[in-house]
Amino acid sequence: MRKILIVLTSLLLTACVDDTASYYADGSTGNHALTLHRAQKHFWSKNSSVELIMQRLPECLRRIELTDMPADDVEIELLSGGDNVWTLRAGKEMWQVETQSCTQYPDVKGDGGELIGVFRVDGNKLVFEAAVLEPAGSDTTAPSK
Image 1 (tube, helix red, strand yellow):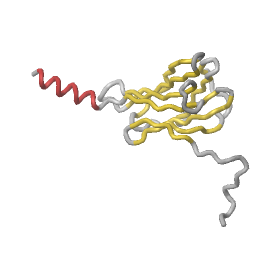
Image 2 (tube, one colour; image 1 turned 180 degrees about the vertical axis):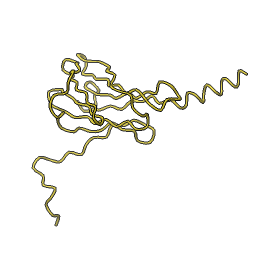
Image 3 (cartoon, helix red, strand yellow; image 1 turned 30 degrees about the vertical axis):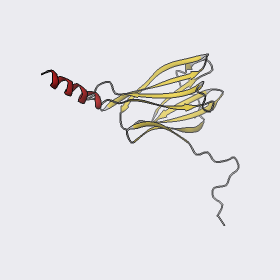
C-alpha cells in the first residue's frame, strides 16, 4: 500500500505548473525587474494563478495577484509608459504598476505606452519575449533594392 501511495504522489506532482519569467528593466543586474509567476494550485485544474513580482531594489519589492488563466495559454503583454510605469495586458484585462513607489494603480491611465515584450508559454515553460522595436524614423514601406 505504501508503494502505491508513493507512486501516486509522484504522478500527482508532475502535472503541476510552477514557473517564472522575468523582464530586466536595468539590463541584467536584476535590481529592477518585473517577474511573472504562473502556478497551478491543484493538479486537476486547467487554470493557473498568475501574479506579478515587481522589484526595484532596495526601495521596491512587491507581489501582486493578477488573474487566473489557462495554464498552457498564458500570454500577457508588457508595456512601458516611462517613469517606471508599467502596464500589463491580457486580452481586455489590464493592470498598471509603478516601481518608483511600488504601487498598483486602481485604474489604468492612457494606452499603456510602448510594447516592451510578451510573457507567454513556449512549450511547457513561461518565457519573456522582447518586442522587436523599429528604430525611430525607419520606413518599413520603402521598397528594398
